[in-house]
Image (tube, rainbow, N blue to C red):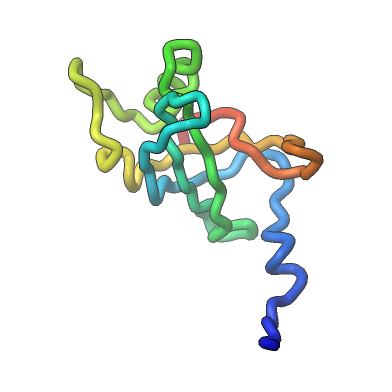
Length: 120
């Protein structure tokens, strides 16, 4: 039998209170949802000089017309203007904006979720 030494605090993840925090987009990839819709999975790092700077925040945007409002909000907050033919997810890497974080419950577990974006 092997012993795995992981501090309980690390298993619970970093504690981030709801609020608005500056962030930088580090990863963006496309995957299929269970409903076979394209979903853009994003990974943000909170920036700044004060905690919770450095914390990673997952995010996702379903790429269906009913959810384009969230994609439009991301573009407006980061100043990115996609071309007529769309955009490449690599164009988003390094983009910065304020993330509006709220507490959400999913399958009985509380978590922090990106609820919106705002310019820095």
